[in-house]
Image (cartoon, rainbow, N blue to C red; front, side, top):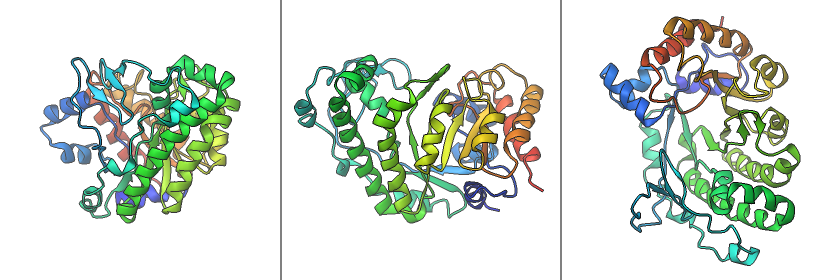
Length: 347
């Protein structure tokens, strides 16, 4: 099978030739691995047996220079500082009325550059499963705009404010992805979105609030992907098992990246309850196993995860967090992927 055939068979909850593999890593780990193994980007993906490739359509609507100390600006005008993507410097809609929210300077999805996305996908010649569409982290953007505690409080005392913010955010993201799919849906296989709704101890919000405020907007994105014939997979960190039934209800196809060290994310339970209804991607502990173990321990634990998750298909193997950290030993990551390739064969 090609990587693409392998992944699509898995999304059909059938057993392919072997378990598909997914590699997501921090820029720092990626640079370290390339240097350690003397490989370029594509050769490293091949070495890690990665069955996926991703194409991007950048936002080019804001050309104002960044202020000192600012490392990143979101399409919604939020300047961030600190490590990685940083933290928001302020929350411009923290005290906004509904009218002020409607009059905010929202980005235009027409400023997303889709001119190269089809050619980038075609470069892979249908050999890999292609991820595309806008990442659409509207939950995180709402936190940036309102402040996290403020957002949660307003769900109770000013729900119309939260509705207005989410509506404008998802209007932008849906418009962006629609333009991407109009340009290249015949070359894309999976609409990949991301919103971190779990913590180490469980969901950040309860199921009632999730269904009231967040789920309808995830459904809007899921329905958009399905209207173009695409599978839809959502990244969600942490423990969020209580929310999985509602995500299955809206016909989300896949969940990434399952973190078994978080509350409620026991792999045996997830597989038994939901394994025939939604694809699970991840599950090999990137903290206690990949980061702290040695190659032999990684091989042992990887086999244990495969024994639980691979039966019947519907499973993509990889680290339990998309960003493998720089301090993770390269030899441990190689041990994980090589074990999947060797041990994850279907009869």
